[in-house]
Picture 1 (tube, one colour):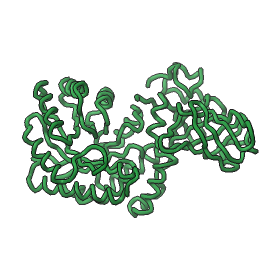
Picture 2: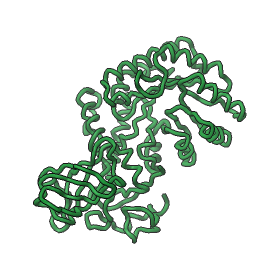
Picture 3: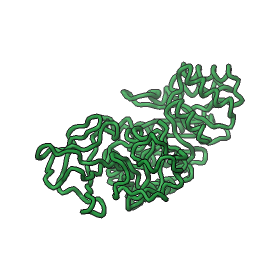
Picture 4: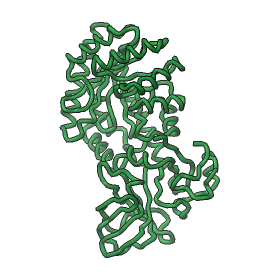
Length: 422
């Protein structure tokens, strides 16, 4: 995003057309009432802290990081992550791959199977036009691998398509089931040379948090990974290049780092984590996941102050129609609600407060509509026109509701903005 355009919510009229690089010169202040609510904001100091924390974690574990871009789909945040030394960026779809390439990202791990005529054609066109662009995608079937090899052959690409074999879990999502099936598929992929190049193995343990025992499933999955990697290394199927092994989403990456530490120490292997939510964190599900990490992992606890929620959504108190019931100007168009409803964390009244303060009494989100949030609890000290600050759960599905988000300093003065490309 170069300039603030007129269609963006959360920005006042006087910001329209202003270059993002000069936004700070306007002196816009959330506390002064300059930003129309609802408005999502990013705390600059917390972004900086989270970036530094993850750099330290990656350094101490010897891992690589390819952050999953679907969390923010933000060119500005992608630039931060690459500046921090990211190995590459992770994509979920062919469309993401196209966007990343247009933004100048040179290495993309598509942590998903590349299937479908149009999706495959899109990727083949990108690789044909830019042979130096490095794309790695996943396969979990001989049929899928053969289709990709045929597409590369027909398109006449100068380089083979790099693929990782994906390991899954029974009852989970994609991925072959078990080490034997993985080794069988690897052998098949190797027969598809020179059109496909087997470069490594991938797994996603985060599916384990959805109703399963996350630690048990993660240990089983990493055991399978270790078994297959050892077989691949023993067979010398990697040639002169290190074998890439990738796992580690945003919820259980400490377990992955601990389990795969022997691989990270092996010069023939590079271990790539894919956490994407770390940079903005949240006040709900990922905050709980991180608290669990600190409790079980001395490595995480030693890094001091942990990840901090950088994303807040502000809204006005619109109505208090009856005691104990408050209506805030915030709805499904503005916040995530797929895991849990937003949680009010503070309030602010211009003329009374100089910064947000803890709520006078607990409020609970009880219902979310397109543009309204119902809160219940003690409302007697709140007034129509007060501002409420909300923490969210699952940042991915809040970011996709904003085309741009102001970045503020600790005094809630606008210093910049980020854009999104969902």
